[in-house]
Amino acid sequence: MNCGKNFANRSFLIYPVAALERRSAWIVIVAMLINMPPAAADWQYTRWGMGIDQAIRASGNALHPPTPEEQNRYGVNDTAPSLVGTHDMGSFHFVAVLYFNGSNRSLSEVYLQLQDYGHSRALLAALRGLYGEPLGETRSNLGETVRWRDDKHRNEIHMYDMSPISRMKLIYSPLPSNKGL
Image 1 (cartoon, rainbow, N blue to C red):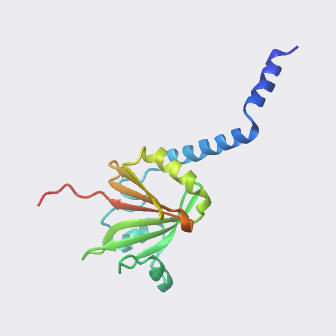
Image 2: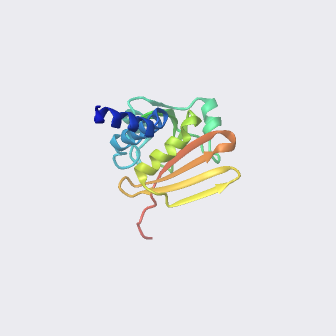
Image 3: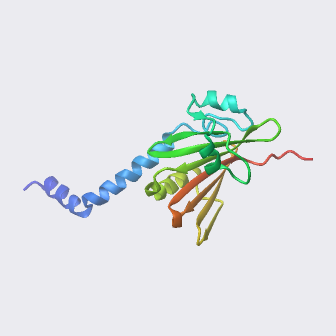
């Protein structure tokens, strides 16, 4: 009798295939996010305060000025988006919208809308793995808001999970300046 073979068979019975597949999927997702290049100070290939043309060049032309439809869809409080495109983070795919404010029209906010809401729980787990436990979480009948602070890259991150309408978005913005009056 081969004890090693019997042990392997018992191990297989203890860990069903489906559980191993789920566990493996989580390990792959977390490993992809941990090994992603960090948002090298600021957000991915951009820097807070850069101009529109600089952001287009930094994106490798992945971003473009919005169409009138995109301006209407992604405008916030009478602020039209300046650039729109797509952004992929491992297996997560987003519509990326960049806002430029102030008299010098400098980058002030990055909005990412998850394209496949079915990945929302995996994205939340990946964000927790990347940024740690959130600074705050709020739940309401509209959904869930989670907030992180990334001091290394000078980002404040808000995740809005609007489960009633199956939409998840991330908003990256620069941390407030510590400059005095």
